[in-house]
Amino acid sequence: MSVKNTSQTWGWPARVLHWVMALMILMSLLGGFYMINVETDLVARFQAIQTHKSFGFVIFTLAVLRLVWRFVQPTSPSLPSDMPRWQRQASHASHIALYGLMLWMPLSGWLMSSASPLNNEGAYPVQVKNMVFGLFEMPDPFPNGSDALMQPFLIAHNVGAFALAALLLIHLAAALKHHFVDKDTILRRMVRG
Image 1 (tube, rainbow, N blue to C red):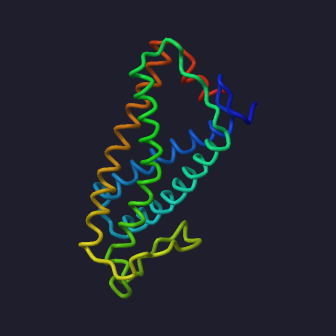
Image 2: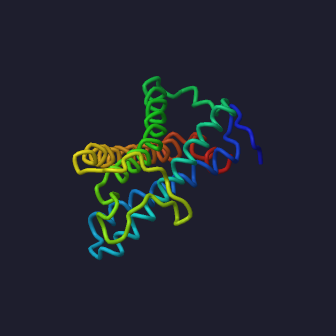
């Protein structure tokens, strides 16, 4: 099992980061939808939001680690030689967009939460903080939040969630097409190396 990426396959660190992040992002998207649209109990919603914030922090940290790994291991498996140019360009663009959203979603969520007036001292019976699994508090760039300050970040976070969900579906569909229709190694090398 190789650590390094090659022109034929991904090393195990890249594969582990890919699948762990895929699972965490899927859980965060589904959890975000659930806590906003389904959960009606305020205490349970508060707890779900705190967990969501914590996973956002972990996702951001792993995305940065993934980018560092890509920098340290710039070699990546070659795309099939018979792949049309437009598919190569679409693959490249979608990966850039995925990396951007993996960073933007946690950042916009943190800024939205920090800008919320619920974070203001004494605004809520329980002080709402940006805690990571109850272990430590993230910085608060907006000690005096407001709805007007929070709204642009809320919109950006919601739009980002839909864009990320759409990109993930396209990414999954493309991987399955390569595996079942094109019968190439694109999916296999991310699963087995």
